[in-house]
Image 1: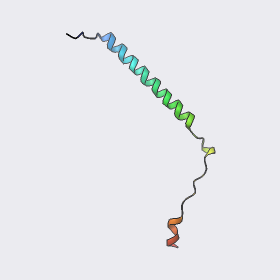
Image 2: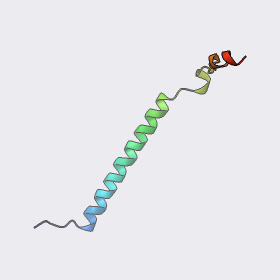
Image 3: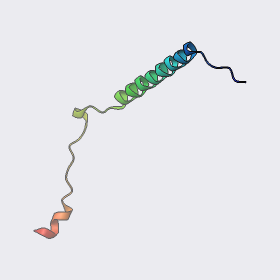
Image 4: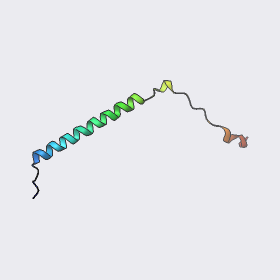
Length: 56
């Protein structure tokens, strides 16, 4: 016979899972911010115009 979990235990488990999800979310956001390249450090893209050679 399986013992039923009390509502308090289920609430506690859900709270722990929610806290773990939030911690993971914050860690991912912090990592993304650390890896972000500021716009002023990027180079401007130069279009590839080879496809236009035959059209002139």
